[in-house]
Image (cartoon, rainbow, N blue to C red):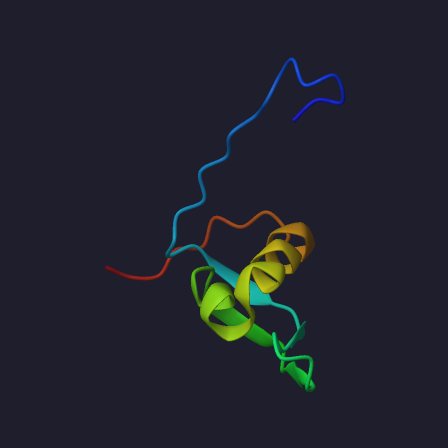
Length: 69
């Protein structure tokens, strides 16, 4: 979303895109999940919720690697 709210950009990320997932804090605030390499991006949500997805997208290098199938 632009600062003046006149434009927005939508991005579609394939759920099976394989990316490294950073260490993400647990949603209950008790510790964190370990970082993982070569995981489908949709696993980030199940491990650490929306915050982990955001951290994964912000921290992931551009990747064209896809899981088989």
